Image (cartoon, rainbow, N blue to C red; front, side, top):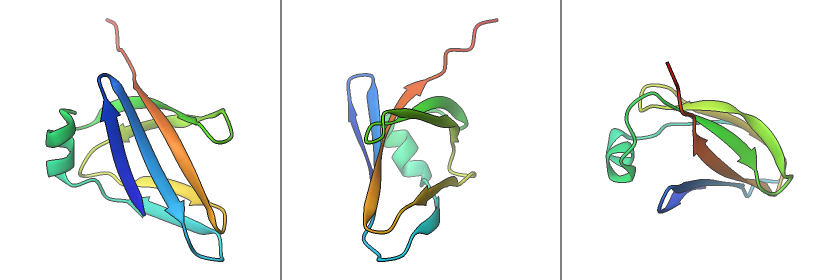
Length: 88
């Protein structure tokens, strides 16, 4: 299971593995989700795993690119996403 929650400028991604085996997942984000969240295609985010309190990586949110995660058996991830400000 996977879903987003947003409040003001904070965006969280919750992902749960209810299987008894670890999984490598590839999440598709529908364009309607990006539109609802008011996120432009290919927006870059820094991610922090809130369960383990460690930076995960930077990820691009796009309906054309999958989010790839590894999740232990009967475990989950709560990712806090912070938009990367690109300065010129």
